[in-house]
Amino acid sequence: MTINKAFAGTLESGDIMIQIEPSDKEGLNIELDSTVMYQFGEQIKKVIAETLTSLGVTSANVKATDKGALDCTIKARVTCAAVRATGKDVWA
Image (cartoon, rainbow, N blue to C red; front, top):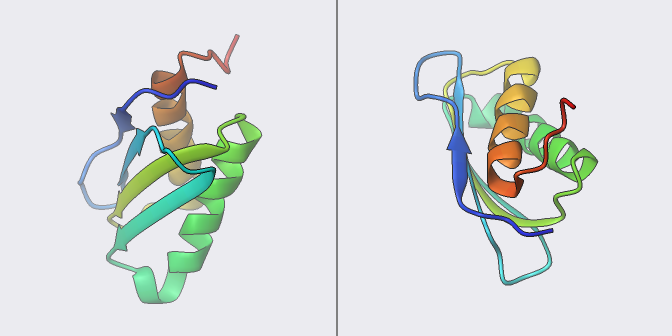
C-alpha cells in the first residue's frame, strides 16, 4: 500500500496530532510524545498500532503528540490520517 505524508488532529487539550509518513523499513515505527505518557503511553501506542493494522497500514512512520485524548479520539484521528495518507476510503 502506498503511503503519502499526512496528518490529522490538533494540539488542543483532549486531542492528539497524528502524523503519518512512508517508511523504508517494514513495520510501524510509532514515536509518542504525551502529557500522560507514564500512565497511558503503552495503551496509546497499542490503539494506534491496532487501528492502522485494521486499515491495512503495516509499514509507516507515525509521530503522535497527545494532549490527553481518549481512545475513541485516538482511533478517529489515526483513521483520518490513514485515509489521507493512503487515499483509501474506509467509510464507503
